[in-house]
Image (cartoon, rainbow, N blue to C red; front, side, top):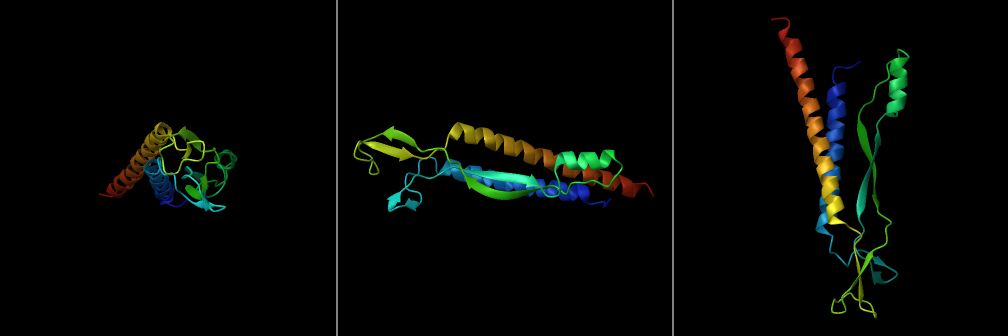
Length: 150
């Protein structure tokens, strides 16, 4: 077992949660963007993006099973595997005066729910804070171990 395993796991989680917060911020900033990418010559509204994470090495169950069997099972943290677009269809809002309204007066709005994004942001922030606490605890244990010889 390496002494820096705790640091590695916390650092990877901090990086992943920071990226998650950046993606959520982008979703909130584009909640009213009706002109995103062009598909078949037509502007499509911004599509909500989501971060997909996975363990760096094995699942939690695999690591736990290895530990219970006396092995050296360990996880090296988490990684972002991809950022994917939400496939939920855009919301249709009736606004015939909007420049992007269709012939019937409906505007395709992004599939971003600001309330849901704020809940996700709070969750990401709490996860980030928990990993900072774990990192500080690991650092404190190292400092106490160094004081043993004094």
